[in-house]
Image (cartoon, rainbow, N blue to C red):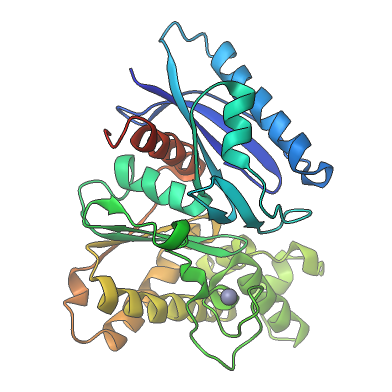
Length: 326
Ligand SMILES: [Zn+2]
């Protein structure tokens, strides 16, 4: 067994898992509240404590833990091991030495990377991306994140920033995005974007199962509820997913002519809608990417669920810390 700890620094929860990076198996895992409002120092103390607990409580006569990998939601400086801007975090964490602080507090070598790049690495090594050389991951949740594997390597780009696929601009005159631009993929295909479409349709008085399922409470309208309505045959709900799927297809067409990937993996809560998104996505891809064999690009759903991030972070640490050896 080759043991590494994979961590996920989430806006709501911190998670840590002891992972055997030879087979991607999670041996033991634990989570605790992030409490981001308490600031970086308190959160990093809590994360270091969680890492130590996971190692101690895992009953691991298995052996030594070689390193820690942390997935963090935002822009990072991989060289310095610092956070630059964390999405949905109190205070945003400018220039916080995350890597070195965790390394100091745990006395274990540590590596950091963006959280969706960690998911990408995990799915590639042990999930839906196994066996391919070039793939794209689109993570559909509160936002839309992404990651790229190119020629058998996680593609990091400048300071690990490659793969911000949610901010591919589809319509420069479209709705405002959190990044400051307009018409990014994220404003069409994220969970909140899909939910907002459902709310709008109900508010406009369309006859839709969404109105019945939410029982008059708009706060209950989520992408999952709209997916349920669509699966029950509701035309309005189906159209909402068609539009989101078409947006994904437009972005995917751009990715196809750029990278010509063997596989595109959809992950995150919204991806559970499955075929509701996949069909319109594939249709738009075929229409828009005409110069590559787009019918050969496989589209699959992620296989590791919410463990992809911690498995990927552990594997990334294994690659970084033991000098390139997998
Ligand atoms: Zn954007």
